[in-house]
Length: 75
Image 1 (tube, rainbow, N blue to C red):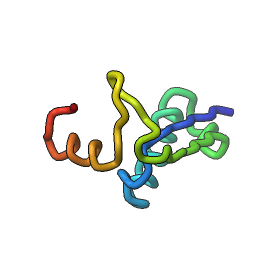
Image 2 (cartoon, rainbow, N blue to C red):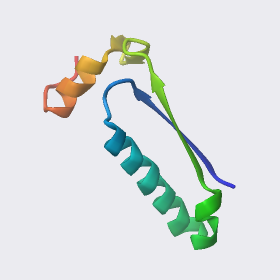
Image 3 (cartoon, one colour):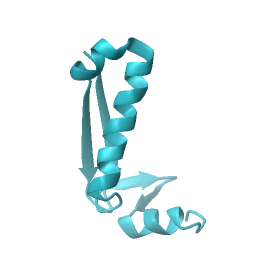
């Protein structure tokens, strides 16, 4: 039984986007293991508090991720 654990910064993804993450990760596992494993594939999305995530030696916030997603350079 596959378990996929995904951590994201809180407030970055909408409920619809989180549902899409679960669906697409499940689909990817089914592609590898076969359709019979769909009902046994567990995906856990964990939201990490804004500012409790670090990249490159600095803390990253929800606002930072949204800015990067919009095309702003990190940092």
